[in-house]
Length: 385
Image (cartoon, rainbow, N blue to C red; front, side, top):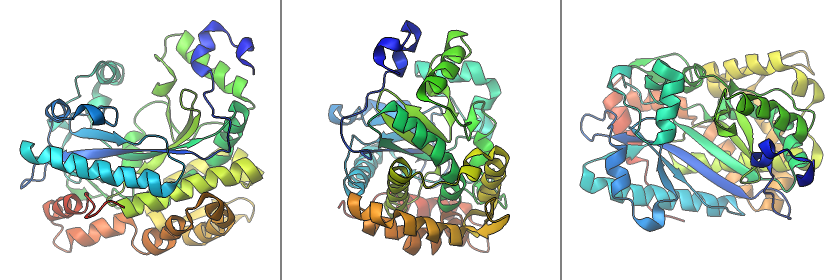
């Protein structure tokens, strides 16, 4: 759909894709603000924003809850560069928080936060979410990792959106990093997933036949004032016309930059794989009920999950699926220069997945304050590569 064919209502959907090969990167991390000692959530985002220097204001921002802060990178061509900036931002944030007697950490949920202690941040957008979501917006905050991958054309981006749906359960399983909620072990690997599911317009989107189909569908929602703009669609994977990207949003925030690097590399390689090869099975692509069930299994069991493979007619261990995908991604990792980071999926995520690591830190005595203290300790890298 050319620019001239767009209605005035669809100006928001102009695709800002660069005339180059796909797969530039942007990364966003949602971070917990903490009181050291008690290790509870600190509802102090306004205090933090007041001390952010001008050169970082575009990269450090508020989120819906007052105990959350988002750090976001600029546009990068490599995983190493993007994660290097995330590491630098973590270090800067740690320095900014110290005089405020605050700390930071990353996890899909805060282990023992209680809803009645939560406050919604004061920014206009967050208050609009509160007005729309009502009590849902006062629930305990969830914290995610979002990865943007640049696609030159809207047609290519729509194809990538459709194909990436097939990989959402695997990415969730590998990133699951929120076993605790309201002071107890939920038995889930990612409690964040069902918690965030309470919001509308979340989950795995349907298949779109074209970019025009996608635009028309969202225009109806915007034009009828059901939502202010397309960014109020909180799907697990979505398009961002303003940036010319496919944004993968399913993943829990990662406690270390090493885990973040592994997932960023995997997402970048998967998008390139799908754009150039159309790797995902057509049966998986269109089997919404299979994808939804796999999403639940991944949230429940993490890397121990067995996901439904409709091509084989059986369930397959996540580890087996991960190795198959890593093999398919290997040539793309070499082309993108992220083979080392992609290999971290094997050596880090599969060897010591986030949910398992959190349970180990809490120990047999289930000391969740000790757990949060350890997460805060691992937040800021010792050195920025």
